[in-house]
Image (cartoon, rainbow, N blue to C red; front, side, top):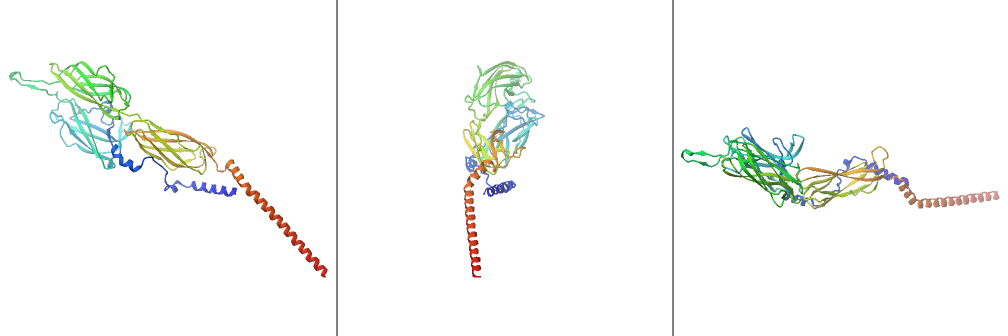
Length: 481
């Protein structure tokens, strides 16, 4: 019986050592808490288009979080709008177009600026790395008689998500013109006293934040550089007042207004504001609005308004429960393992999946868990086949493995985290299993001995009876003779 059981175990080991392609049609055993079809139906509601404010693309002097402002050169201005999508887009293609908000005194040559934008790998940060995004970029021609100043341009992005829902987003970009004429002001024409006055124009040149990544709950300082775009007029007694959404940003200054006594033509001046970003701010891009009042050298009062962009990230807080692997497994076992993930943050994480690796353990595949909204939990499972260890030394014993979790944040950046586990692989022919086998077979051994004794006794008796019978027959024959 012992030999028969060993033969069965060896036969099973030969079967599981066959190429894994034999099992390609088997069910992976993955279970996800949320229904897949319901998730796809809801996907359109979560599809959002946002600017990639953390990376600097070719042709950009700064990232959007650092205050990217397109500038003009050689009669053209280059505008780059890198877009990230939180969901899927039909055919991985968006439609981008330009809308000009001003019709009078515009520096732009009106044309049909419209193009398809395809999802692709774009090199960023001087080619150090790349990111998958939709890069909508345009070269816009400028008029020869353009005036200096800051002009808004609306970039319209639209498309269709994976479920057929229309998605649309407008992004307002401010273009700074510094190589044109001074901006025009009111003209007084009174006989021989006819003259034309040009008021200076103060615009935002750049904005630098104290942190490259601004998370909800952070304190951050914004260094905003202003430039007097006029080539002839001074800016005198200027006040700058800043405004932000009070439910999201708290100003850590005694006053929201800065005073600048004098800015010479073409001169740059930097002012600083310190903010506390509230912990509940949804991830996204926000405006800081500057209201400026000043006078020119002729004491003419001027006002202007500018905006700078600030991109806020929600910190990711993902918790992974320990992997449910038995503390001891036996070669040829097939074991069910499961993982569980909790999203304790305030932002959504996407495409959560787990990859298991361990010497002697072969999983059926990657554990796919899916998307997790803030404050939700999801789980997944798969099966692993237990084999002998391939590392140097004994094929049995303790083995250490890892489960690597991969997931993507709302900005499209992938993250990973590893969790380790241990288990012991034992042989199917271990002393313990053999002793249990011997104990279970003792009764049959005793019965076999008893039966053998009975058969031997019966054989002896039968032989003795036959021998006595033959002796009696020979004696009878002698007596008769």
